Image (cartoon, rainbow over the protein chains, first blue to last red):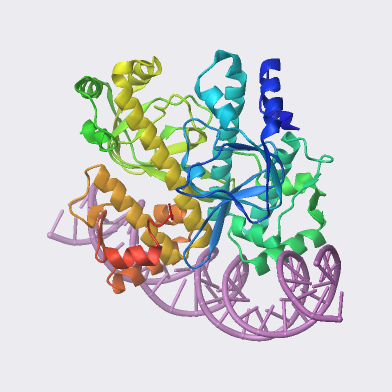
Length: 230
Length: 230
DNA sequence: CGTGACGTTGATATGATTCAACTTGAGTGG
DNA sequence: CCACTCAAGTTGAATCATATCAACGTCACG
């Protein structure tokens, strides 16, 4: 299971072994509970199963979700902590994870034998930052439908990379409409209507936590997905 | 001038001298020209005078600005490049800067004598990432007026840290309304009207590239500025 | 069978965009 | 010094996208 981390970069046997041994320090977090609170020290963890999100809340209750954590993702594991780690992290489903503090110590020692693991983690962090930029683009300049298309395609790629997807366009997305709305900067009601329109248009299908992208090509055009010039 | 970088952390004499010598490699970039293009290798530079922004454009012309670069800020100087560096950077005014490729090489050698400089740069990068999160919060969950208040306060703090501010609430902001709109995810017209309302309410005053915050306390409350719990 | 979380719907309000016209002010060249 | 131009800012009217409020439906679960 943990080997989904390999999606980022191939690992050596030593590293794989190391990850395997971590499974001893297993723990489980209930839906709605926090993995991380701003101000409190962050426990390094790797998520084995379940989804979580990084979020911030305004005093009047408005919430903004910055991103999602899916199986294979790590929290608080990078040596140089980023501001993203100083935001609260909340479980959206029951989350199974392992305590990776030991791993963090091993890595911060800078052992050459774990260079590949380091690289994999760095790559994961890069991807998370790139996702932040896409998120800004969506929130600032895209319509409700464009945001949804773009977001769905991003989650498709991420779930596939994590080995969670069933097929090309079918993957788990255990998010309530409220959560989607808070991520995409929309009201629940408007999100609901936009989703329905997309279903009617034959773009997607949803059933109990799974999303099926029916017309990837059209979705990519609608969302202008993946064309950051280069 | 260059010493504004010190705002981040105190530097040693050696480091200060190093920065001073850079002024030999001076160059000047016209308004509208790019400092950086996605795909092209990034020339490391430090901005001495003038403003620039990081942005991305959709095929239909919609633009989103991710952030601004002000005197004292660096581009392409960090060893581990972030996705932010893979976005185009455009001069919003005439920009005076120095080529810092040599500095970058010196730093990547990992010389202990420049540890403070390294730390200053790391801190600057952290701040830029934190600003991205604030940006997401604004775009996703704040009203037009809240976005403006929040953004203005952020720029006040940054210009003050860079030693550009005239007084507590008076600082340069050489941005057209179009640029502001593209940063804050609003249309020009709506931005214009919101600005006017804020002027009428005695919150701000603007004249030829300078912004004067007249009631900081009220602005902070309106924007919920600076209260990321902790 | 309640109860609660989630999803759906309609009616209505408002925030924001669009388009097009007009103003203003800072150059620029005659 | 004037007329011209151009970019930036301003305004009004019409329209559209999205939000809000309140009600209702549905399903899982104790």
